[in-house]
Image (cartoon, rainbow, N blue to C red; front, side, top):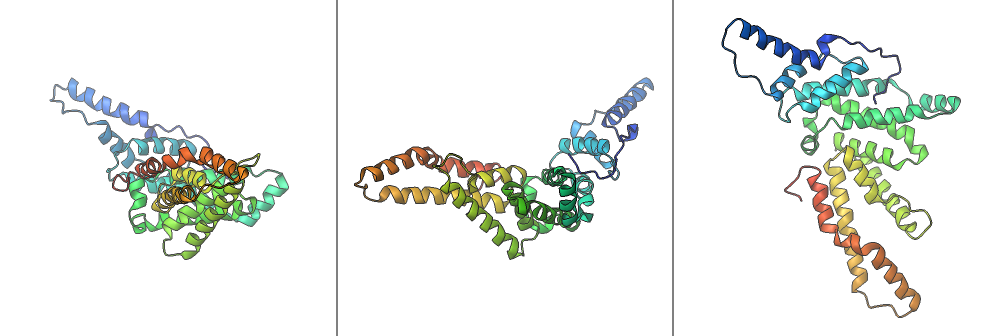
Length: 297
């Protein structure tokens, strides 16, 4: 769901409708047939959606964005129409966020007694993230056009400002992962991302035997990877899998403890972590396969 601070009425205009594009192709074929002219072989569905994508103008309304998104999803990955349409969708989703002030939004949320607008901001950023294929995120950052990097960066900063005081790790982590990707030269984002993961891992480990299990760094990165399968996320997730296995192996190499309580603690550890450690190699492979990186799997 995209953010809209002004009403966006539905404009059911035929020229922007995917259905009309399909009907237009059918009409051309019928006219040619009636005129007893040779009918050329029909275009494949990929070509039809490329033509539909080239006809999408700037997106201003919700129904236009839905139709544009459907066309975008149907485009072949190598289609030259993909990048211009993605830019239009990104502007529609994120440009309204660039003029918002986090302090004012927090004050309005307190006055109204609801933080729904925070969630709408976050969902707009997530929708924009899902416009990018893994191969585009693994390319150099400069391959994402500067205006899109700017919109992504500003939206991510807004999410940081809105969700940092709330302790919302998932929203915070996605925003930092985006900033690490679109601003790779900034050490601030890398350091903050690593601190967040370290704190989350520590809190998750401390709660393993408690009544409520906290989210771990692995859980957090798996969630972020679903929206933003970039190297900054995948490499850290794979590193955590390997580090967990290393620590577990180190414990197993130590002499068996003599006390009953110590033996029980070791048994509990084996029960809790044994299966996960056996899945380390498959987990690392799956992480990189989700990013389309067969060479890393």
